[in-house]
Length: 361
Ligand code: PLP
Ligand code: COI
Image (cartoon, rainbow, N blue to C red):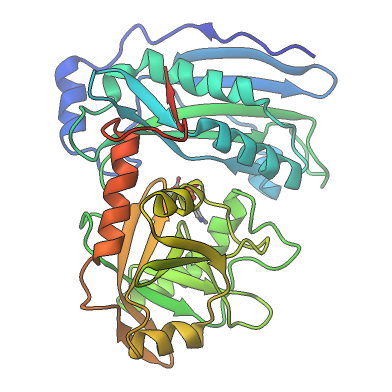
């Protein structure tokens, strides 16, 4: 089956420059969308077809669309950054393509070839490049590739029709407070994912599973939930939409990939960035007892969360049924901020892109 070419039928009535600039002045996260979107269909026996870029618009859907009932849906998140020379580049889109393929396999969906995934992202960014925020700040254009079943019917089985789409949204800070440290609620009984489940796939169900705990965290006055493993309720896994790093002086540790947490691309990149800066960086197991004990004995100096949307966000306080503690002095730590700056500098084209991570359009 051949890979289709994306037909360009962009919006004839994009937002005016003034309207777009007003949005870009305070973009927030995921609240505004650019003028266009990409849609590519997949049908059993035919493969990928009808690839097009067209004006951003609502979709119409049959009430018996299988996704609405059985949640066969996956997504990705990556960002496009304005470079110092005014051009635009995305960060490691090949990794998002590969993770999207892994998510598709887990949900018995067709895989989007890497070149088609990247071509779809590129087509949208190229068409809507005026929406990529100016160089200099922390804003970027967040791309949301996603795919869902479009077949109509109530039988429970993998669908034989899908729609792959890419939409884009200008993004400021994910947390309204900027780099203000977040507070964490340790979920000791509610789990996000189980061994053999789909915790390492980027699928809506995992986020749905996280919402009740998120609501309980908010009731405890906390911003985010940290999930523990589902068997021993002991090993720290990740937050609802971010991975975690523990800083022991010059050594940073992130929970190993057990299958029930997401293999974050920011997480992976930081293992490399940290080593480039002379830190020891490793994957390992961190228990909840260790988190508390090492904070109390002073060896665990900082904790931070990382992800595409949230970049790197320090953890300030941790609350659990067993008590509450503050990480360091409760403010952003030096290692956290050093790694944050180093990663953002690569993404914004200020630092050398030693590992060929930036994909220029
Ligand atoms: N964990 C979860 C559950 C996420 O949703 C995300 C966000 O994508 C991450 C971790 C971080 O992954 P990445 O760095 O690839 O954005
Ligand atoms: C991302 O960082 O891209 C995420 O997917 C996190 C969240 C917005 C779901």
